[in-house]
Length: 438
Image: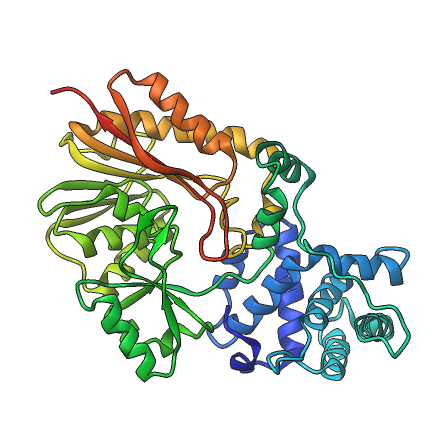
């Protein structure tokens, strides 16, 4: 996430208003990505920053709201306060936030800009001043104790993490409540990692190589010390680099495509892993995606990275069905299955608000449908890599064990298995299978 000092292209009062409305859409069940995609270009960066922080700090902000307003206020006021309190919680000690008086003033002004909150100017002013005082007490006053996990996770989610990761569940939630770092994948068809680091240095952007994740070597991953807009990345629009989490970069590395191989990316949008496979080899790629809107993003990414060729086919189709398939078997299949996305909450903090416990079983069944079909399309001797961005074993290890038991000709090979969210990686699950036979 780009720091606020880079994002002040929209008046803060307007940004608070739009962010509060975006929070309201999430509470109605809409994906925040979908909501943000509807904004105009100059609105999105700051609204995304404010909304993400409001969701990350939901528990802490509501502790204050409940303390100072005994009866929960109407939703529109509640969401505006959650955005403003998140700004206060961020602070301004490093010069990257807003001064307290500015936040209070702009939040009160935001009340005036929306007919459903105009009546609450006095209430918002009083609550925010009390919060500011609690966060910055005068000498001798008690300091407000910070909650190490300020983010909302449903009770069933917390219970699952406690049950499966008894020693790590708090660390997982703590990591997911932090802003995710900006990690790059260098397009090795254009530059080595060291060459691109030199370009970053020339642009006064500090970076550090990420050499491995879960024991798997990476040769194209770079961590930026401070996030920057992609427009500031050298040669971004000519395809020199992509934004991709280091954990996600394991997929192409593990599948290890070779020149001339026929490869299927079974659930391909938005195309990051498709592109990485093509950066590593001149393979015959089929990128499959069911969602028509997301399908276009695959082509857009390949165009930017200059990876389109006659060997690349982008198809709209359902990976759980065979109706789109021409019958020609694949040497390798990447199955990045639809899942709860519970491993990438740091990048999508709306997920805990949207997901329901019943979703996990439904997703598990959908994943198995896709696995069954994918296995039919794989050549004997071929490889299938099963991937989810989930931390729930129902979508990870339990699926791999079911896979191995379901297909007698499936041989499980070495792969990382469950990767929990960490400072340098989102949460992923990887299982690699070879198809025996001739």
